Image 1 (tube, rainbow, N blue to C red):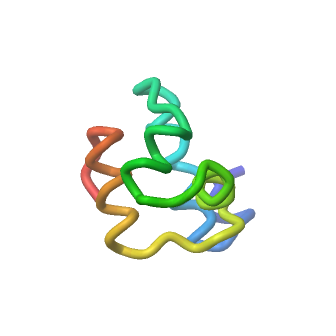
Image 2 (cartoon, rainbow, N blue to C red):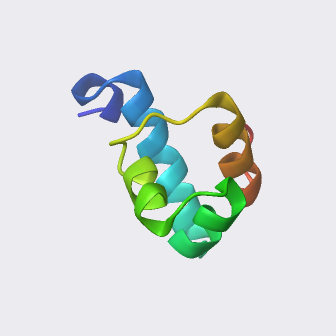
Image 3 (cartoon, rainbow, N blue to C red):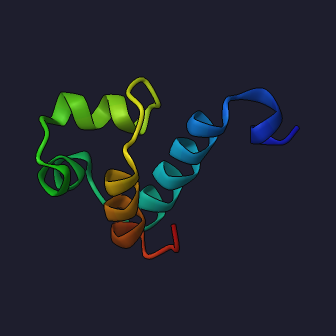
Length: 68
């Protein structure tokens, strides 16, 4: 089943970005520093518990080396 069929669009994007970051070996601490948030907030962002802003999405895509 497609991830887009089981979750909201925002959550699906977050999951895909998180997977790309993991594949590149980017740690939550690096995400937190890049987004200027706590590690706890970075964790919530990467799990889809907090919505990503367009700016944050762009930063994470750049870190994961994928196009937004």
